[in-house]
Image 1 (tube, rainbow, N blue to C red):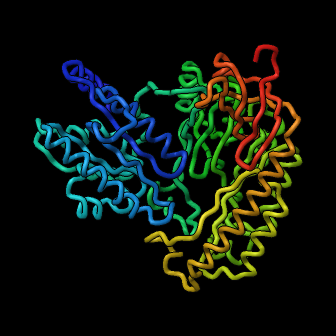
Image 2 (spheres, rainbow, N blue to C red):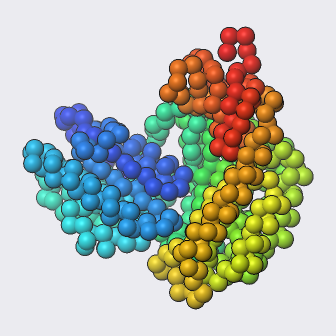
Image 3 (tube, rainbow, N blue to C red):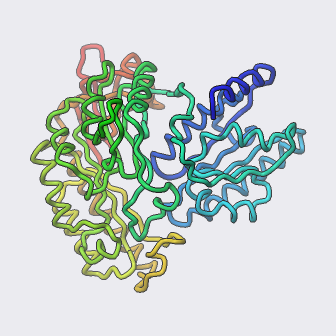
Length: 465
């Protein structure tokens, strides 16, 4: 979509009132990034974001297919949105209801069939075409429901508007999408497509725009972010580490992070970057999923427990203070008590500061959905509770080790209580601190006075804090 289309819509909206846009995002940080970019795309059409759906001119449910019963949750929310739409129509107003993201990609036809009041369904690779889709359903052009779940050949990011709406000192920046690993439990290769890396120039330009708007902490995003292999202006191919080295040179940027990585795509230069690049934070989110080699093989993870431990050892040798986080799935088909105990044993070996834990739930169309040896829900529940208890204890022990220490904290949020700010440490821990409002958006030294498994607490080490 060319600039002339954006200019056309800008001209239209100068003659019309501002419209309200409500987006609800489910799931991963990639969806959060996509939602922000949808806001950017729709702004030239006169749409301004709102926190309430009841008076919105457009509602977008930006869906995720990873979580359990994802489709059921979408239809539950759609039912509530329908009530808002009916109420608006009774008052002579319109509401466009759209379903975006991975559920839309996987089950778009089903959504349109079951929910006749849904106007648009589009996948995660097509949201840059939103102005065209809105045009098709606009009554002045003749109403037509829209479904767009293609995987366009052209680079989506080349067609996004240049302005980014940011609302604080931290931001996500998508550099890679899709996955070629085909884990047997995962729908990402089917909903996001094969691995694709953005060109270096586009990433650097977006990073500079974010910094110009006050962003100091950028998290690089990808379904498999350390598989990044983007083309540089000179035609060479850069790895994630090489990209991080270039971002490190940008004035005004204080912190660089990345997520989510795959153990099989860890290169030595990324390990070295954690030792050598000052702005790269000492934090690693590296999903392992299970502590059992048998289950890892059934998941088609292509790594073993031993190779995972060896990878972690490399990072810790390069950066001894690196914070560790991971993902775990319990109750995968065929998981025995011994397999689950192996997972608990792995958690005991590594000082995880945090982790995401899930019960296995079948995703339609994935190989695991047809596997035998299903684990009863009661057993999955019990295993999940045990795993979460162990990880909570690990996180609390890790956080308690910081009590009495002074950490650099980037304040990125305001607390309900006056005189307090929320921030993040270099290790990605949440911090609640007594701090003056003027410190919002800055990095300050905070003395940690107490800690729980979810957050640290402390006060700024200055005379006037």
